[in-house]
Amino acid sequence: MDISTLSLARAQFVASLSFLALFLAVSLALAWVLLFFKIRARWSGHGGWTAAYRFWVRIFALSFVLTLAASVPVLIQIGSLWAGLMDKIGNVAGPLLGYGILSVFILKSCFLGVMLFGQRRVSDGAHTLAVLMVAVGQLVAVFWVLALQAWMQTPDGALLVDGRYQVYDWNKVVLNPSVGWRMAVVMVGAALAASFLMMGVTALQALRRPLGEGER
Image 1 (tube, rainbow, N blue to C red):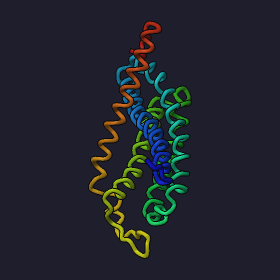
Image 2 (image 1 turned 90 degrees about the vertical axis):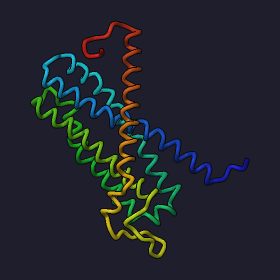
Image 3 (image 1 turned 180 degrees about the vertical axis):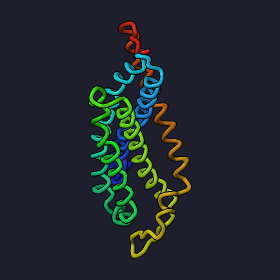
Image 4 (image 1 turned 90 degrees about the horizontal axis):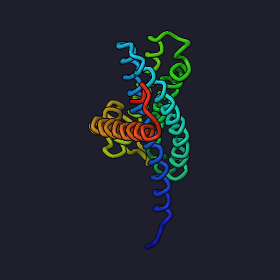
């Protein structure tokens, strides 16, 4: 079987994208799990929820860093391996990817420091708000990426003019009919990935030693 340059480019891009999808799914679901832990700790006052939050927030921080690290090769490969494609869809892909990056830096980076290091420095309500904003920022960033993916699969709201797509209706581009079910699939996949991770870590800890209050 002949291996073409296109096949190698596809394999390289899929491998990089797979790592990004894995770490992104884990961090996306863990952000909402941590919000649940914070709300339960705030309402019940039980120390076990706070202990669970403090343990899993470290895993979330690691997954967040790995997501950022995995996204860099993907962005580079989009411009280097698929330069011709980006030249045609740049008027659509550029703003959508820009909105996704902006969502990460504004909604996540502004509150991530408070979430990770400010639990004892700010009020409990302010810290819970920071966790909420990080989770929302993660979700919004994923939405913009899925909006681009949905448009590439079922293009609408743009016309091909002189070899480049020109947008005539951003509502049709962003609110593509397939965005909803793609978002649902990603959320279910993220929940499953985080669930298996949490069960695996908990089982491994149970084999080594008795579980603590926040680890059950």
